[in-house]
Image 1 (tube, rainbow, N blue to C red):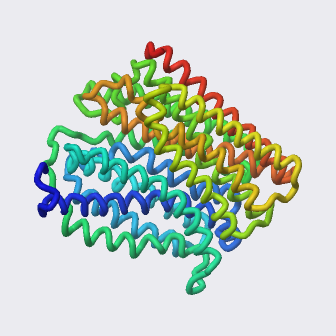
Image 2 (spheres, rainbow, N blue to C red):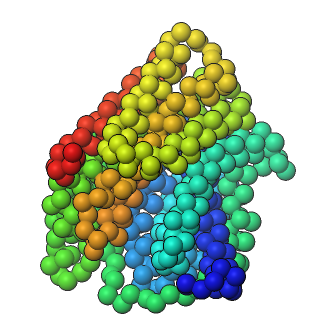
Image 3 (cartoon, rainbow, N blue to C red):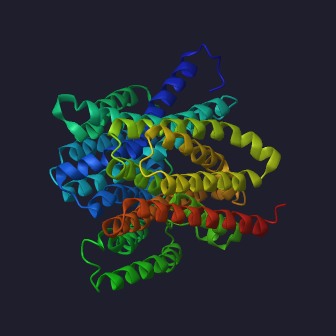
Length: 469
């Protein structure tokens, strides 16, 4: 791979990069394009607020519980076949989402979509690691990072455009159908140019661990999602308690898997790293206020402020722009200021949330332009945190456990996203049903602020545990 740039091999690996990053882009767009379409989906399918939350949450839960297994399947059977199967599954389940005729069916389709994404996405980073071990590695990962930022902007914009244009009278269904031609093209190119890599024979799956984690998360978050629809029936509380018990029992199960000579879903040695565990708590709190923020903002803009889908989607473009700018600057700033960059990012997010709350209290019907201006503050702060967060949290992890640590990081981040959507979404819709939507919005903004403050506190405690200055 150290051949001249003009060589066929050199050219081919950049085409492979473009192919796998296109799949990552499709995954990123899908995470945000649905947000803009949610109010339209709710109206057309007569879906309850709980079902709308579940469209996002169940996707994240499925992805979070299977992403580690997806990475290991790539090691066992080879990156190329698992990637192709993952893209094919993601494409077909996207088609199913677009064809769904009810809220429950769409939730089931999104569950399947999240599971197939867990096969597809881990192979992207694996491919980058394998194809770029040389000086071109930095450029390859820079391209990957830019694509991640652009995916958010494209998702918001595409969601608004597709719902507004109503192409072929498809309405919101187009936000899922758009993945079909893209997925088909990625599969065709991947089959032709992706190299086959050697399999790792000693890698094993921990199916029991993944199933237990999935069951625990469903028991814990299901009542939060559907509690209001079920009038908070008494039996919901024991279900939530059982979810906590199941997740707590996962560690014992993983020890049993290790004693039998298996490969646990969780690297148990990492649980003894106090700095790493405090870092994971910071990750959970940070992502708890991530997708849930976009859910509440999107729903509030379209349903409470009556801002059309296209304008609502476009209102997020300045945010994603400042996010990308901050992400590009965060690395250099982290070298100079260390952990303080993350604390500064959290502080900027709090400023953005305070500005939005003040606006809600003083202006009953702000325009999309005014909201967009304030969202830029939040986006810049979020970019300062998200870009270096993984490096900071994984800093104490030994090189031999880097893959396991990254897998746990990704899982905790998506669980945080799902938990935030379930919990904060439930609070917003519950208050909105008995009070003004503006009250619900201000209350949820305060919850986002509390989550970010807690994340910053855990980051500070993590630094002390790691013995950093």
